[in-house]
Amino acid sequence: MSTNAPTTPAPGSDDQAPVQMDKKVVYLIFGSLVAAMFLSSLDQSVVGTALPTIVGDLNAVSHEGWIVTSYLVAIAIVMPVYGKVGDLFGRRWPFLIAIAIFLCGSLGSALSTSFAELVIFRSLQGLGAGGLMILSQAIIADITSARDRGKYMGPMGAIFGVAAVLGPL
Image (cartoon, rainbow, N blue to C red; front, side):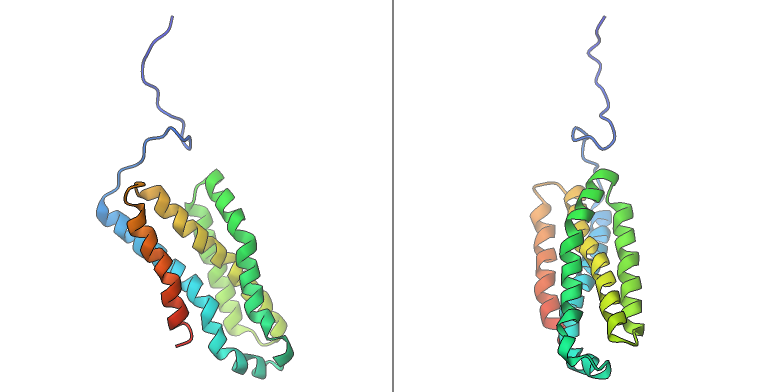
C-alpha cells in the first residue's frame, strides 16, 4: 500500500525550500554582517600605522612582524573550520561565538602590557575574525536567492577595499 502524499524534507536537508524573508529583515541582517566583516577586515590594516609606536613601547622592534602575522595566520587556519561547523550545526551560533572571540581578543590586545600578550591576543582576535569573514558570506548565501546574491556579495567584497584605505587613516 503506497501513497503519493508529499513529504516534508528533514531540517538541514538540501531539499528544504528556501525561507522567504521580508526585504527589511534581509537589509537588517546584511547591515549587521557588513559591520562585522568591516571590523575584521579593518583590523588587518589598522595596526600597520601604529606598529612602530606599539613595538617601540613594548621593546620588540625586531619582532614586529609577529603582530600582523599572528592575526592573519589565525584567520587562515580557522576559516575552513568555521565553514564546516556552520554547515553541520547552522551558522548562527558559530557566528555569535566568533563575535565573542573577536571581542575578547580585541579587549586583550588593547590591555596588553607585553609583546607576548599582544601576539597571543592578536591571534585570538584572528580566530574570531576568520569566523566573521566566512560566516558573513555564508549567511548572505543562506538568506538570499541565487539571483539576488550578487547584489549583496559585491558590497561585502568592497568592504575590504574600504577597510584597506580607512585602516591607516
